[in-house]
Picture (cartoon, rainbow, N blue to C red):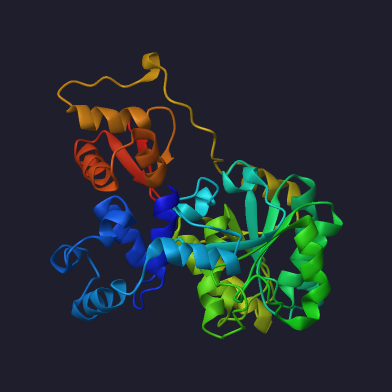
Length: 373
């Protein structure tokens, strides 16, 4: 795992290689260390590796030394996870584009990382109405008091209200930044930032000292959606980062809820659009919302299946039998199946495809798999 950590960092330093291509590399070669040693022709077999990208890899890879790079990077950024780390947030790992490095500051709670404590994202406009503020405070307070961690982006408006209300209620909150975790933006939230460090966590895919940049914030919204079991959109115009977050949530198989508003209110237009597209209503009865959020499946600690619970099926190769035994108890993410079986990612992917074609396994949103028995 320590070696693989260095290669997540090294690959992320090559221009043109983003989170999606990194995920494909890992799945194709099994490990990024193996991919690092692959030939140009072998890399060309991976979807998305065109001529220009291959040329960049060949040119830049020869000048990078993963272990040395990791040692130097840890001196400047000591606190970060990679997908090779056991503490990397499992829900985020299920998405198609998990950040190769996720930096953090604050108080880590492993139950959140393991998916055993539910996290709910709250997003919305930077210029909320009194109506939006009131409901954001009420809902954030209710979530915090019922054991949910509130996730948002520490922007002005709805984000600030959700973080603040959750902490006032004695709960935890996570802020996902579009800057380095040591850069406070907006600066007026410096007191809020300090409070979050003592009552939760600040995370970012950008290394320390990264200043705010307009292109960073839409990208960070996928992390808010990826960390969360559900996304609540409180108030949002038709063009807003909150709707980008909701789109990511839909893509990741997360539940999306929206606060209804008046037809002629600009801050409500985005929410009304989401509701017309199938998002769930946030209604006055908060107990109903809490019940619905509580019904979202949680990730449990999965132990190896007792032999009595394993599925013994005729005519399965040992490899297919090994994969189906791993998911006999509960739906599992692709990466956890790889971990449970000890097989490489390519073999697991091939086995899952065969099992799906045989009607024995189904794929769920978020690259999770379950048996059909």
